[in-house]
Length: 108
Image (cartoon, rainbow, N blue to C red):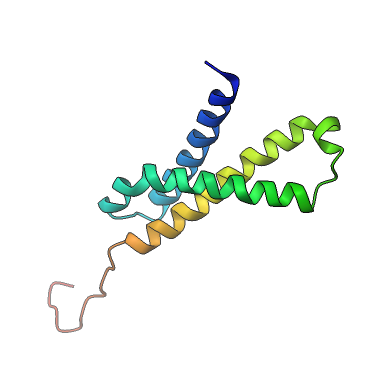
């Protein structure tokens, strides 16, 4: 398998796993899990755009040659954070609201 395809699969897997963790943490509704593969791909694309902006504006240009491992792992961490954050958001949006028990309800 091509190295770039393996890196892409790793980035997608990391983003998808982090998003799944966010969904599980928020106890998302069943419908969120149907959207999860597509939304995790969009989260990865958003992570790529954010990483390119951060790298262009915040990191020195020579880091591409002197610290390639730091750049690589920094990108993976950003993908995981974006996936987890969007997983939390999607979980919160799809979570079924639990209504508090009313005082007239004798069962509670």
